[in-house]
Length: 111
Image 1 (tube, rainbow, N blue to C red):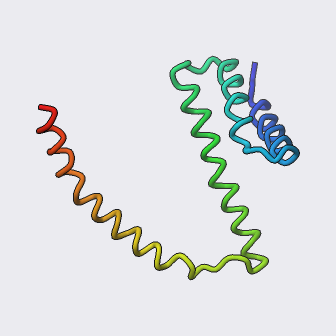
Image 2 (image 1 turned 30 degrees about the vertical axis):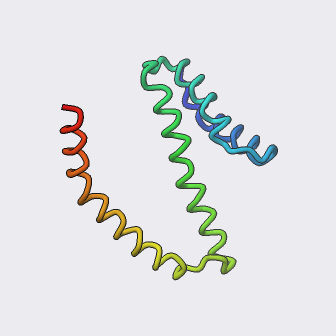
């Protein structure tokens, strides 16, 4: 039996409940997806990963839709985050360069 119809049904029900109750969609989506995945015979060791990844992936599309809606109303300041982005790049650069040293120190302490 084909279960393709279950995925749009889960999305519609999650959207309805999230809008009606004001809850995060992931709290409803993950258990529903686990049920659908189990009914489809997915391997048990992958079902939770797939359900969580699917719920988190929907955040990208919801965020893009929200940014677009706010931008059309003039509510997005694109220049606001430039200073923070530069600071974040420096932090990432420092962390990436220090990572091998930390790993080696940890191995010396463990070994």
